Amino acid sequence: MNNVDMKSPIKTNKTLQTTGAVCSILLVMATGMGTARAGLIFTFEEVGSDVMMTSSGSIDTAGLVSTSFADWGGTGVYTDGTIGLIGGTDAGGINTSYAFHAGTDFTPWTTGNPWNASFFAFSFVGTKGFATFVNAVGGGYDPGLAINTSDLVGSVWTPDQDWTAAGETFASIGLNPGTYTVTDNVSGEFITFQIGAAPEPATLALLGLGTLAFGIRRRSQNWS
Image (cartoon, rainbow, N blue to C red; front, top):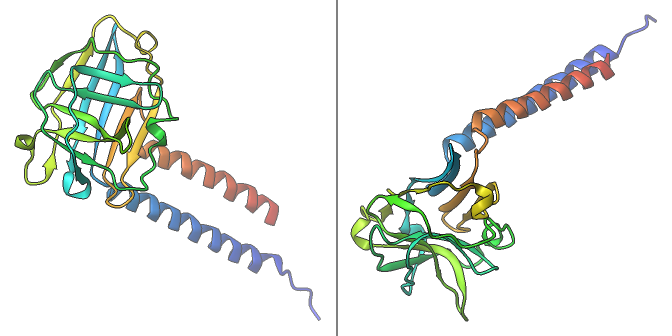
């Protein structure tokens, strides 16, 4: 009876299985990158000798919970030691509030600690007032959104404010670089505080591909 090398079929099957896994992961990446939920992003960057905040995105308030109105004063970041919030009402007033659904994870803005101190010395451009909180049951504050109903298009709100803190740095203001996102656990609508540069989705995908390729190479070496 001739000796039969059984390594080749096993190696081929393993390779096919691994290739299939790679394709599945790539499909998930592509799908996830193409179907992101609607949300707001407030991005803080150090630009020259200043700190700048730019607002972007949009949020569908129909995916949140209408709640009692919570007012705000000034333009800047706030913390009471238990939660980080931002708002700008010098540009325009607010008259209605929306909360996240019960069960939403608030820890990115609480224990996540986006900033260490309150700071309200930003100059601004824009006309739409906002704040990222609602009054919590029993006192204090919860993440949410306060806006002016006149700025809604249907149920969608889009921010237009940009801020500048001249002569400041993240350190002088007390901003902690990172990504701090609260996502509604029912609708998927989200609000993000981005402090410093965020990794591009394409970069994350390439990093994932590099890791997978390395793993495939190591496995191929072990099977040969």
